[in-house]
Image (cartoon, rainbow over all chains, first blue to last red; front, top):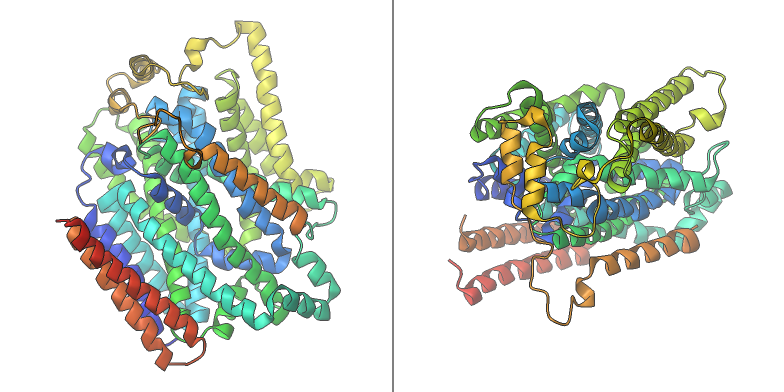
Length: 570
Length: 59
């Protein structure tokens, strides 16, 4: 890498960091720091959701994953995460937003009790710090292999990036995170386009790569260039696609660091429209990142560490200047996710652990300060995972863990939002799902003589939906018989409803729903949470014009993505 | 940061990045068209930022 490449990386990223650091310093109250005073517009939330979801690991590890699994991964990014954001913003977030909670775990306690709240925090903490570890490792690979920086200095730089991300989140909270994310998303997209364009042209387009892979091994082109091309032994291709889709729907539904930016929206319309923006930009960016994998297979067919493919392609195809642009995008991707994990996990630790169980009656300033202090510790936790990465590929590791712990939580949240199951069933669903998931991992790792449909990652996604949902329905039926069905009062404001509940009613119910919150900071913030409007604009007498209807865009997106995946690219 | 200062900051940042990208053509002529396109786009964006400041009379 030349001096000019390094200058580009530094100027682009430091420019955005300094902007975030000095523009949003006045966030004093917890409502401002954690939720940006519920003032975020749709475009910023959408770009931020994208920049949060796609980190530098999603360039490096996704290309590495596609090098092995092929473009079947597109189903994750075109359908899975888009459907996840749509389920989140059109349904799941609605009761959370209206009831005035700051975190999805907080809603879980109201719906399913304190154990569900704590388990959700632990799952979020584990899965996000694991992701931090992935990002650190992928940034290290990028600096080491593209930048030619020594191993020690690469790690020093990774720590430096993490530390500067901490600074602007600590000062500006969610607002700083979302706006810097929006700027970083542009750098990320440009970086992805530049590498892909250079490789695509050099390879002679789709036809060229097809011919090159055929010449190497006809099996490569069948497996890598078709969405339905990857299927391990005993697993049908459709189940692989189902697994890819489920894991990213779960990602969007359970992750507080995604949910918090939707909760900071200035209206319900804004967070619905944001889901469309996020889905579109993710689809474009990840097309570039995923297809780099099969393109790389044609060039470097025998890589032992598949995550090296992205850095190798950058070095082979890009001249000075453009290497800097791509690396700047990768570093921006890291920054945006560090910051989002910082604010998201901080909100969980402070509201759902510290203020709920440890210090209940301190001042608002105290909880904002504790939130700020927790951010560097959260970011540092990610380094604990680093020694375990890079052995069998980051994607495979993440998929295995996600299947065991994340999908059961998604199932419980969806059951809580869409059905009238009893409060006590949440813990049952979580325990059943986690019990199965962990037993499947143990069986797989220890080679226990169990059938593939029990131990395989891909089958686990299916069972992790069916087992928790089934056990919750069954338990709810039993409780119905013993204690009678759930009353309207018990679930008012906690499940999905199209219509708005009267504001005074809802605030009063939320404030006194849990006796344990009496007189606490959590109760005060719930009671004082403003009821936000459904729309951030005046609706014309003729009704909402078609181009301002998020549901229409959502359907259009899903139909086109489905057609491309299951017809054109299958 | 005031709106005016934000626009100046954004424009200066874009100009610096544009200058670096264009300067990189002299480090290696490969893909010079792409570098020129990125550089010119960034310059145009920077100018648009400054022009918008004058039009709206932000302070």
